[in-house]
Structure formats: C-alpha cells, structure tokens
Image (cartoon, rainbow, N blue to C red; front, top):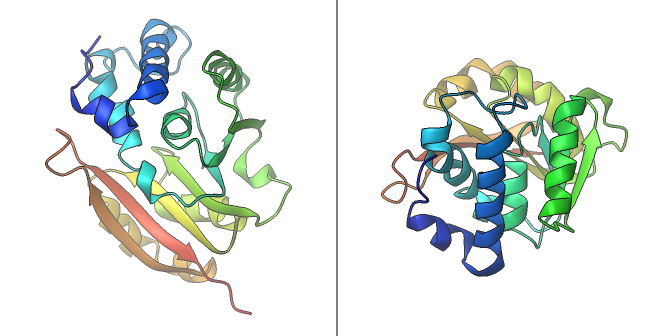
Length: 210
C-alpha cells in the first residue's frame, strides 16, 4: 500500500479527520479488492489517486444536504464526509454489497453526518431537494445530468470529479445542459502544485425557469 503523503493531514485538517481518513484508507486497502470495490492495481496509488483526489474538492461544497450518486467504495462520499462534518451527505448506491460496505464504514468511523440510500439515482423519491450533488467516475456528463440534476433544488450545484476530458464532456452535453437548466458549466483544476495529479471539478448550477 502507498505511504500516506505528507499533504494528507493538511487537506483533512488534522485531528479526528485525518485519523478517520487513515482508518478508511487502511480498510479499503485491506478489503477493497476482495469486495470488488477497487482494482488490484489501485493499492500503490490509493492515497494519491483516490483519497486525496476526492478530499481536494471538499471546500467546493455548500453547507446543507449533498448527494453522492454512485458512491461505490465511498469515493468521494465517505472521504468528503470525513473532511466536511458540517455537511449532511447522502450516499446513493444501488449495489447491495457496496451499500453494505458504505454502512459498515459509516458505523466504524462514527460518521453521524452520513445517510446511505440503496437506490439508483432515477429511483430517488424526495424530488429536487438537495443543495448539491456529486459523482466521481460514474459516467459522461450527458448521461450523468438526467440522473443528478433532478435531485438538486433550484439554485443548487452540480460538482463532479472528472478526468482530462472534462471540458470535452461539457461541449458534448450542450443539449442536456439546456434541457436540465444547468448554467455556468465550467471546469476548475484543483490541487495544482499540491497534488501529484490535480483533480478536475466539473461545476454547474441548476437554474430552473420560474
């Protein structure tokens, strides 16, 4: 397993949070592959490629209730919940074994700000009530928008963690952006000069006509 980078404690703010992050990362390293959460090649870059790649986005999220669609192994949902205890996180995941993992981690880390919901995003029953929605490595933007924008209140935010093709995804999703009333779609590079691999955040705001 990859050694913890020095910057990790800074990004998590030290104290209880970095200890929780260490325990989560260790659990993922020990059980992630056997439980189908991460691939066999991910251990040597678990901190840099996954945990820090997620936590670097923590300051972007508003105080309120935020959904993580397709939460999977808890990247970014569990990581963000550790870093932002002032936010209520809803981890939305359809696969039973992944839901079991997420629930175990919530209990093991005593994360009182996390709710795990077993459902597909399109099965969400509460309507457009979330202050923001995030997703990481789920699907292309044009596929992701119909799954996520309907969950967000008017004026709420979409904050997706993406790869190098983020801007191309925006360009390819012009029709869907209009259909789902997403404005100010843009890409921000996070962690440049701090992380070995900066994170690209694809951002947008839901602004429905009155």
